[in-house]
Amino acid sequence: MTITTPSAAGATAVLRRRPGLRGLRVLGRSPLFTASVAVLAVLVLVAVLAPVLAPYDPEAVDLSASLAGTTGEHLLGTDQSGRDILSRLLHGARTGLLGPLLVIGVSTLLGTLLGVVAAWRGGWADTVLSRSMDMAFAIPGLLLAILLVAVVGPGMTAPVIAMAVAYTPYVGRLVRGIARQEKARPYIESYRVQGWSGWTVCLRHLLPNIAPTVFAQSAMNFGYALMDLAALSFLGFGVQPPTADWGAMINEGQSAIQQGAMLPALAPSACIVLAVVAFGIVGEGLADRIARREQ
Image: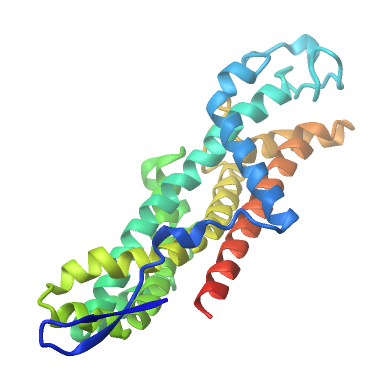
């Protein structure tokens, strides 16, 4: 929607009304999208309330109940050490979601900053930042994580830092592209003609207008980051046992498969797949709705 307002020079400028975060009101008519949002809401709730919901201590060992099947006491059975699988899944949601949240938070913040600066300043700043982000694509995130683990040691810190660095250029390139398109719109120039400083226009108008698209991409990136961090934990570079983590649980459950027990590895695998698919559907749904609004 457009409105007209006189500029400081007396000319008539066309200003575009900011959609802002209103463009994210998309909990709409798609059952699949709604179901995915519900799944993510449940995952977040489970992660927050894990200590209350878990029937047992996730690290409590009971060798007498090793690989016990599903019973009234252990709804999903136990692993090789006799630890309750359901309790470990609930607590594993915390590490499973916290790591990607840190990765996406840091990479979105840095990527948005770099992309906006490159698009807004242009010239040599755009060239330097764009080439730097292109070079960053040549470094695989998993390889960088392994190198950092070799220096810092296994745990959540090194993989989170490595993945944040790896995801930053993806966000930066996206933001640079949409920020350049937004900068070319008439309302930007009209505000500047009225005497607004460039950074004021950028912070108060350009950033809110590109925020919905960045948010949609972040939702999809969240699923990818969750999968990458789970893979690192599976390989032994991420969260270490006995801490409950979905990726580490799959690694620990491999030997149980040979003994005919599938749940120790299958249950965390299903959680990862469910979360990644849900984040992907939500991200795609947000992107589609934003694209339709801009048509």
